[in-house]
Image 1: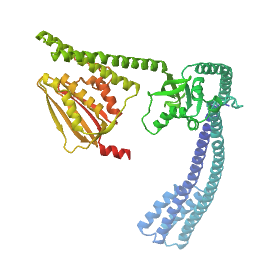
Image 2: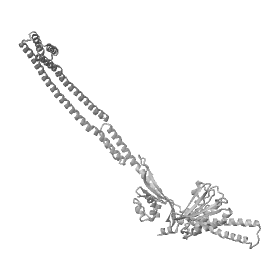
Image 3: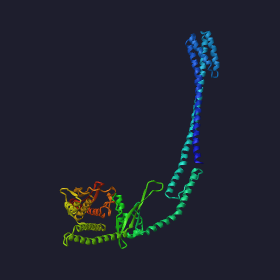
Image 4: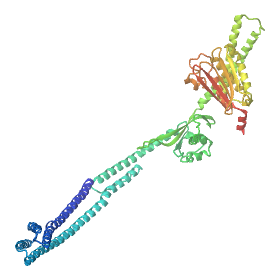
Amino acid sequence: MKIKSKLLLGIGFLFTMIIFLTGLSIYQINKLNNDTKNVLVANYNSLDYLRKMQLALDNNILKSENEKLFTVNLELQKQNITEVGENDLTNSLVQNFSMLKINASDSLISVRVRKNISDLMLLNMQAIQRKINVAESTADSSILWITLAGTICFIIALTILFNLPGNIANPIKELTESIKEIAAQNYSQRVHFNKHNEFGELSAAFNTMAEKLQEYRDGNLEKLMMEKKRIETLINNMNDPIIGLDENKKVLFMNNMALKISGLSAENVIGKPVQDIAMNNDLIRTLVQDLFDQERDQKPTNGLPVKIYADNKESYFEKEIIPINIIPTGEKEEKKIGNVILLQNITPYKELDFAKTNFIATVSHELKTPISSIKMSLQLLENKQIGDLNLEQHSLIDSIKEDASRLLKITAELLNMTQVESGSIQMNVIACDAYEIVEYAVNANKSAAEQKQIRFDIQVAERLPKLLADNEKTSWVLTNLLSNAIRYSYDNSVIYINVFTENEKIVFSVTDSGQGISPQYVQKVFDRYFRIPGTKKEGTGLGLSISKEFIEAQGGHITVKSEFGAGSTFSFGLNSLPNAEEIAK
């Protein structure tokens, strides 16, 4: 039977039983009401009439008001004849009352009248008793029928209550469990509803779906394995090391190149926690360090080259950790399922970079000798040791001297840059006097400032502690900042030099009143070879980059603040001697 038919039949049967029980109750109550009404309407009224006639006799029938009361109630009694024999007794009462009115003093007639009243009262009382018995029988019968019908309805309703929900809910529950099994990829799950209803049709459709899913999985498993082999082959033949981790940081795969550079074998790493492998392998520990730093909210080192000894030489790799995130089918939230560590071999580029650095260093070093010879020859010419010079020759010597100084500065910057790029910066960190560094930088730029009539405003805080720094390189940095400030300042302007303490560091600040730096270029001025587009000032674009490397190599920091059209402020801070000693402890 269909579920819809079951529901209609069950609910319809309950509705029919309710109607039947209601109709039976109405019928029985109405029947009992009629029996009760018969007692009240007929016999009770006769008794009331007879009682009033009895009262009129007792109060002297000769009185007109009593005679009238008797006559009125006698007429009412004549109209309320309901019982067998009541009519004869009423007629007898009428005759005797007529005789009593003629001969009121006859006591025998009065006795007969009273006897007629008593007989009528007895007759009605017996009728009342009989009708009460009938009403009681009707009430008992009503209670019996209503109780019987109610019990039957209750039993049927209880049966429906216990069976109908189960017939619907149990198949749904079984179907739900089966769907969960299918969702868990248990495609062998089947549902068995041997019923000719909607659930039977649903189970047949569900079983068909499960069979097709199982066939699909079995049919595609070989294809999936083939694709897996292809991907593994592709990964293993890549020249870049690749390591795959799952969401629990267990090793899913390591290609041949990764196994080669780490000195590990696949059977010893696949399926094992990477932290366990890292405990005994320095390279793996370096590669996965960023994963654990990210969990501790520490700054990752992604982007820094990793030096690895591979192929009997030092090799350089760029490390990239790629998180693998997916949105599972049927869900909306993204879920992380692992990470891939990719190492890109940049050794050829590093070798080219080293070659470039060595070439620049060699060329710069070789250029210093002829440039120095040119400057020496210019000094001889200026000292007039080989003859007097005319004004045009003096002008040419000044021009050659300026160009030679500029070339010497460029070669010095290139040499410093090669030290930075090769990582061979040699720092001679000692206790230095901040005022001496300022004095050296000012003297070095004094001539250039006088040519543009620029004045230095120097403010050095009192009782400055010694700073721990490389005197030569720190002086070079301040000299370079002053040189840039002079270059970009207007004539007859002022350059402010401030030295003060801040957060246990000694800060050097150089402020000019030039044109400033456009906001989009402020963060790029420390990049190598960067020059602000459109500027006509000469330079290599290396000075600020070298300054940044020198300051950071000493544990300091360098910053710039600029307001376009109003000038710039370059500042760098280095550790003071007390702070440095505390760090050493």
